[in-house]
Length: 131
Image (cartoon, rainbow, N blue to C red; front, side, top):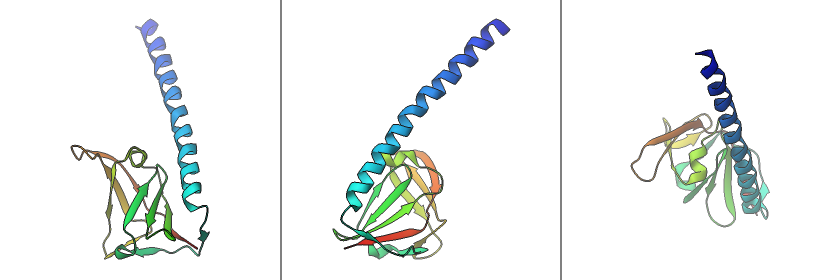
């Protein structure tokens, strides 16, 4: 019995290690995309809340969501925890108790096809970027 347990444990460890490497690579790719999107904009003072009517589009990454209010206005929220499904194009569903999104509000990700829950994290502060 032990003879089979040790190789099985070794395979599990190697599989987890191999799976972690693409995640780090994906985060670097996300960081480059975010930097490119925000390159011509200047960051402002972080805000705790953002009214839902201020933006028209969201761009999701494993550790960050960009709320786009136009070419010259973007709010960046670095997530507490990670929602890797956002990098795959899963939909963010943000639960808030008011008419605006605030730091600490829960984000669940759902698959575009089937609506299956794929992850959960929380919003961080909103940093405005503008020209």
